[in-house]
Length: 454
Image (cartoon, rainbow, N blue to C red; front, side, top):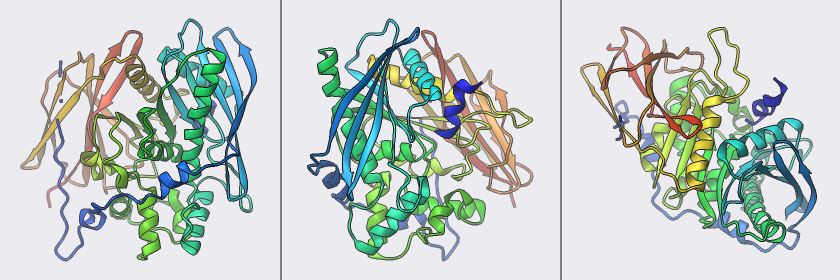
């Protein structure tokens, strides 16, 4: 069981669900509040492209295992406010795999461990190609022992106080990934005499946030992204939706509310900060394929958070919801016991990476959800063969579905019709299952919430 404990810490059937947002008379429109057609601020790209002579790397060791080869590199990505950011960078090559021009690049915190090595090699085995793990995102603890969200919030406050746009912690986090790509390319030329020119960038939570913003730099080496459990693009709208669903901001973002960063302050500096760090602001630039993976019971985000930005995304896009799973993406049974490995998330992530790396087509799932007279009719279309379709349904007395239990309804006939409940709220989405060689994986539709008639 210990093999997968690392994940806990990381974390023939198609279309568009038409989602409308309405407000009561006199209420401001969330979409209007967030609408901003101006060019994104240049500060992220300026920071990433700024010359920094402290960047360097070296090979620490090469380890032969029964599963394959593991290279470990030491890297300094940058010096940020007089602090050197040091990282471990591991490259996993499963037995029998060739060196491919594109590889999966996972970013996470901490340092290598037995669990991370097992996970990295398992990813590489399922993808069938080399996989790289970048550690130490972000450099922490800093500033009196602050880590994770408390550290990000601290740097946001420092930006608001100084107006120095190098402070937001997401910027050096992004630069670390860019420098990791540089190091991997240089290593590949030296060690294998091979060119690596593409990366599928992925990570969970704030590392998923980093994946979005890395793509926002426009670096041509990024061929695709797979952000996990960071369902908060279009932040002004998300904050309003969060209060609507939970009655107040989620307790999971208390590091930001405690520092008075949420609600977003009504100041020019706070407005610019939001625009610098919200991937939604860069949506016109992020045109690479995107695989979005969320837990349907994630305590951080409202259940229908994706609907606030899905239609704005450019290019290929896919979504997976893991039912009865929180921020760690591990499904829980009826007694609350979690699975050891998040199978749906792992398989779908690896299938997506395999498609990008080996130029295989992803299933082009489309869907239409038509609502009329208290019921929704969900229609699907897929160019690829579908093994199985499941309809997942959950009930809640309020719009807060975090404690709700999702029940599946295998579908033999489509379209499927879901009726509004007699009281409270009913949420649903469809999951389509596919098979790619030895890998079974899933894609989903958006989530729709139906309210009882009043």
